[in-house]
Image (cartoon, rainbow, N blue to C red; front, side, top):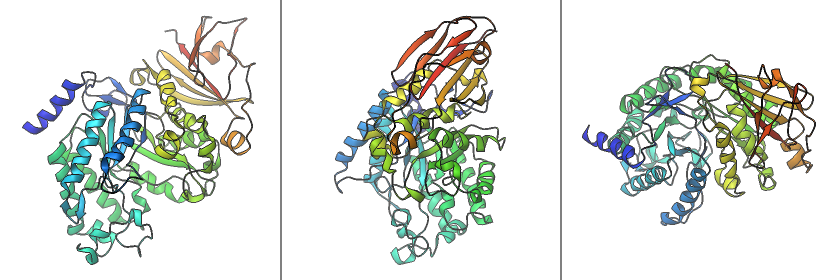
Length: 472
């Protein structure tokens, strides 16, 4: 208890603006809140670990890692996700034997997150097999658990079902509990990355393991959120698994993964990035879960996830990242969409400024008190995403003709929209008065005056946001 108290006190003393633990708001379960009830809107990215670094020279990796964290924080980001099972961080040198050096790397990462005020979602495991015969993906194979490598297991199914397998998970969990306790810096603990990528995720062993481990993690970290993730929602066959997992007792955050994937069976995964993100959020909201929804992993890939998208190298403006950030929140999610490819896309193209642009829109907005209703209106020119709250209405006007296909594949320049007008009803006002427009591509606010019963929208490309303070 003394060690836990010291950890919490240090966090709050160093950063007075941190307002305690993050949980689900007790007054509006669609959103997150700090312990003091103030809102927390996750604005962030997946940053699971460095993929390329000289073995034995972790300092060089930390130069890159700190650069990512610094740029995200400087642009209004407040959330990152790490895989503790990533080879750079994984403390297990052999089954049940932990590396002090790797633990100190994690300590160093946590210190950097504290420095840059980035809340951490901690993913505990990601492997899908313990032999290549089970799943021919070396990066997702935990070889050290197999009998041939000194472990006690024959298969990943045995890991889930046996006492020996469960002990491996719980012992490591207890190690993290002793070392870190519940920290206000942690957004929460995620059991696994895309656990249904294992074979046979629909059976009782798989779900009973999740029920038990969600409970076990919560018992050890009662002040932090606990959650689970599933693979990309890109085929109809995953719907019943998603529905069951998101409803499991103890799964406190509804998360979905979905990518722009030209090889995905679902046609929606070939659409404009804003539709991909919006539809994923709408799917989970349709389950009536009474918990926050996050598009927790997204981006663009080659067919069937065969590497990062070829279009990243030409998306130097960040049209896909813009949609990744804005579409989920404007569709009812509790935060931005969380991009994958933090290194090969966001950092490589220096697109961090998009986080500042999103932060500019939600600055001063309390979604808990607003109790936003969300909707989408389709016009010949636009998709208009609407968040209507108690005091504020936000409209995100998205040009339908500007897509990854038109700009990145066909190399067409975005058109200039200069004749868009909105009515009082569209804007949400009964009486004429000025409203604000924000151009996220040029980072500027513009005041709009009513004219002859209409509001002429400033000329824009791709998208623009309209903010209205409503009459009460």
